[in-house]
Image (cartoon, rainbow, N blue to C red; front, top):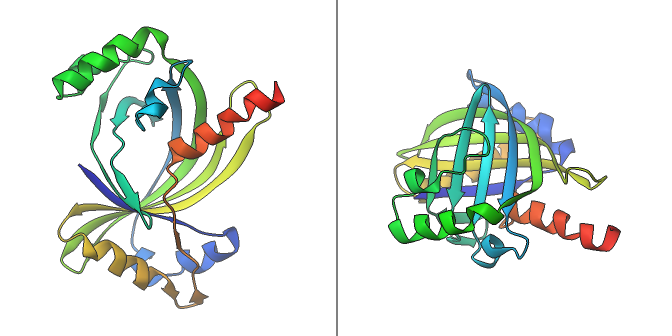
Length: 207
């Protein structure tokens, strides 16, 4: 079960956010290349699910996320992820829900790559209010391969690793109070997959 708080921000607020004392420690930076899949009739979107292949460094990962719930930027959903071979889409060894795995394997022959995200992730792991939280700052873009359709991506994700869920909101409040001035961190219920699907949908009007 993944529990995270997604926050959007403006590029002008980025220097103030990065000046925050909580983000002064040694973090890590990694480029993440992601491809999202669905069937021609958008079977996964209808179920509010996402299937993604990710290249992180030299490692390929396959991820499945269920619909879950999202309100005021706070989302809770099931997630499965493990190492993969590109294009294998081996859901039967990934997903431990037998019915879901069977359904995904049935869809596999019809899955197509629809859109991609390409971003740099800066990552910190913080302890706050009795919780351990992963802070991920993503900067890059979403695009539809073979088209000119693209839009910028700039967001902060706070993922709960352990401890009380309330710590996510508490940490977001603290991060808004940077020494150089307030940081506009706005809760967002739109996942990268949802934004990518909205961008892909424009291919119907630009074709």
